[in-house]
Image 1 (tube, rainbow, N blue to C red):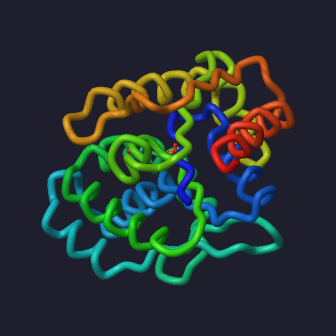
Image 2 (image 1 turned 180 degrees about the vertical axis):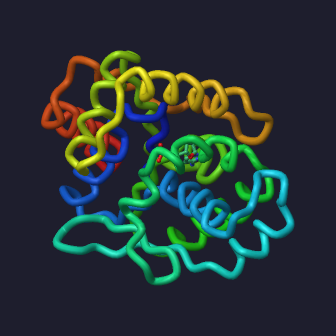
Length: 220
Ligand code: DC
């Protein structure tokens, strides 16, 4: 069974998805991390957003996968742990533009379907319920207020030892929301059959209880 969790950046989708995956024993695929890896591939090869053919070649030659290390989901690019690099300011600056390229989306969607084809998986992203797995029996669309999302992203970066100005974060989130929601290919939107979760006022535990209840109903 597939559980699709979509929503805006920094609204706690990944935390919720990871917590639920470990509670119910499902695999977890962080599809945002895959677009972040593509962005890192562009940056580290000195490419620009306009060099699509070269970027495609480099992506096809790269290996993106996930491993669980001490209970943490870690992203690997060509067998190197890139968990920190893919969350950098530089990657944040470009990732929405890379994720808007149809060539990149096609490659990543194929990979996501392949990764999740056997077994039970939770995928979080922007287009899981609308494009990648439109038949998923449980779909959530997560949102939270802009202020709360800025605060959460700031905390996340602080914990990773990165000092970033809150105004910068706010600007970056607004820009990414705009690009993610207005791109031509698979724009971010709530699937008709997705359940809306506004978690602005909810703790992590409350969210986990809420989603576990929904999961039990679907699975009953
Ligand atoms: O969830 P995140 O912030 O790590 O996602 C990084 C970027 O990737 C974000 O700007 C939107 C894009 N993305 C996407 O277009 N489709 C997905 N399924 C997941 C992420």
